[in-house]
Length: 116
Length: 111
Image (cartoon, rainbow over all chains, first blue to last red; front, top):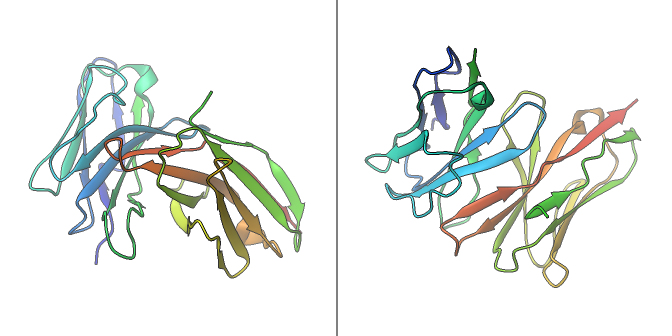
């Protein structure tokens, strides 16, 4: 089975533009996470979906960030009016909340965003 | 204070050495615990889950101390290929699935 897929793998954009990042989780994984990792730093939790619902959006850094998930599958993270401080690798992970591999997060390779 | 804290290192050890990492967490409601490994410019990958009774996988041993709110990772007989950043992860299933990663401990194993 395929792993978590993220697209694009790299994105270069100009300050002020909007960007949309996509995550395809492992089939059947109901939980989906977004993280941001700046160069040389740890993972910053952004948002968690259980199914199509995100119970807590307080991890999103500002109102320029939004995320949605449809069909309990694909998720998109949208950053509006990008700033240079948004430059980072955006990682997506999915997991299944029960069973032997309960809550083990499997990561995609990330989208490397560079805002010029 | 960060919710999950790790000694950033770096830990520089010779091949064959035994090295231990600790991780402390502040949320007593945390329910699931993991160690992940992240190689340079790569995504994190699961190393092992951490269970209350402690668990071992080959050269790796993980332990959880709920009373003191820390988890540990012991690596025996270090290999060059163990060089990476080790991340501890704490999951709070009661808080909207919030998942918190430590900033990682960097290990370099030298010949």
